[in-house]
Image (cartoon, rainbow, N blue to C red; front, side):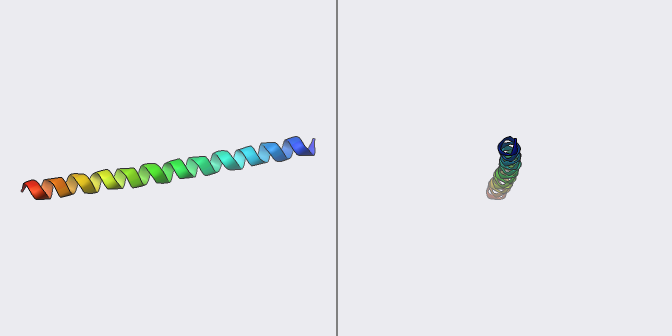
Length: 45
């Protein structure tokens, strides 16, 4: 029983970490695309 609880806890932690990593990846990609767009607009004008 203890082992199952431990596995469940570990899986929950892994899922939380994955969500954090995905969020950070999305934020950095979003920031990068915004910067690229701004640079493109500055170069055009």
